Length: 122
Image (cartoon, rainbow, N blue to C red; front, side, top):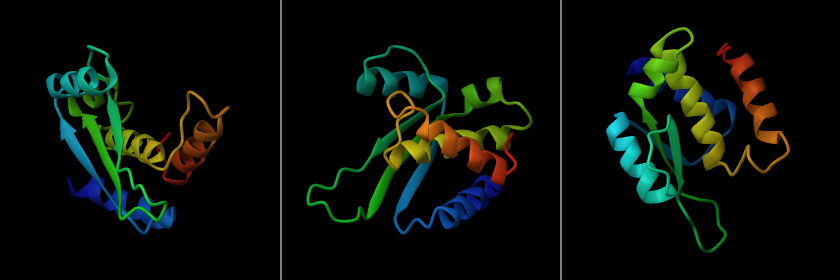
């Protein structure tokens, strides 16, 4: 999807990222398997992030992988499928960067909301 690729390039530039990451589009069935195997939850979800772990403390050459269920994105899209994939990519990238909306007292949500406004992803 060229539109998603362009968005990811713009987002990387906006966030001054110097390392790579991948976005993999999967089905609900595949997502359920990953969610069960890696998080112990036997259900599909919309997005999962898997950080690359660097042990020596240097800058990561690769941030990690973002898996997005296209089926879930299609069900919950507000505007277009592309817009929903962009929102989920942004969310997943913030997790790769170390943000955790379940533990950071709203820091991730605030940043995500600001970036969604900047990219007009309301």
